[in-house]
Length: 379
View 1 (tube, rainbow, N blue to C red):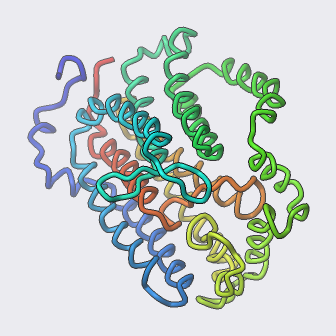
View 2: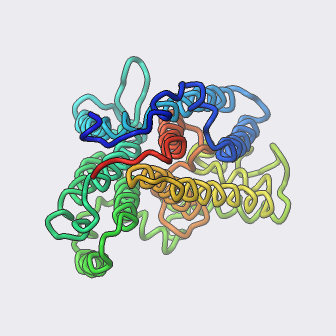
């Protein structure tokens, strides 16, 4: 195991689990706690000042997730290197299981039942794709990173989940997977020539991709350009969201004072559009403050990665930062009408069990990278 995966100092091997746990980067813990607490307060407000059902469940999930983060960070990083590909295979199998044993919610079949719990398979892949790509580029000599032959496998690791997720159908998550995966390839050092080729290929393929979209997906794109074409149908979400954002003003209406949420004008107000609720109640100042917390969290994760000696650890931390940045950007852009509605939750903020736990797991991997930042591996 040691010859294959690398080496570790005797002092590191003798470090007790308790020492690993207390070696975490505490500023990151503070940041994610602040973001989640703000989200819990917003969920409390959405429920009319009631802790149940949303805020209560979200609190329990966060506490469980925090325990998960510490547990993941306490594991030797060589364990995660070993488990990277098996985790990816399990995530693919979970995606394959969706059309077979999954059940439908809101017209889309994206969930499976595991031990009495509802699990969104695509959320598991969010973690697995970061692990798999980080391991791949750890084992690949740097001189081969841009070799055409060695570009095929990482692209395959990205394309496979994208295809399965699109069949659910979930175009938004498929695009998010592709963005996270390709950005990790870029950070791993893949030549800029490939990005030019991909960009040109994307432009050429755009008309064919449009023809392959389902009617409701095409409608979402058209609504993005003209929400008023169907103000009571497909355009209703974004129009109500914009009203909520505008009515918040500079300092907001105050908790439980938002008309869009309290009068139930805003759909999905506790999940995908919770930021619109928060923006109406906390105003521009509160919204910018929350976005500032996300930005600092992403920068902290990247800083943690830069301190790591191994490519695997660096890409784990970078992958967590990329995933957090991409999902946050897409959700905010969707809420303010800059992107079409794709159903992407705001990490650590929106109500959701699987999303919360997988995000905390991913942050735990970044923390494990930081705790084991001095460890190196053989290529």
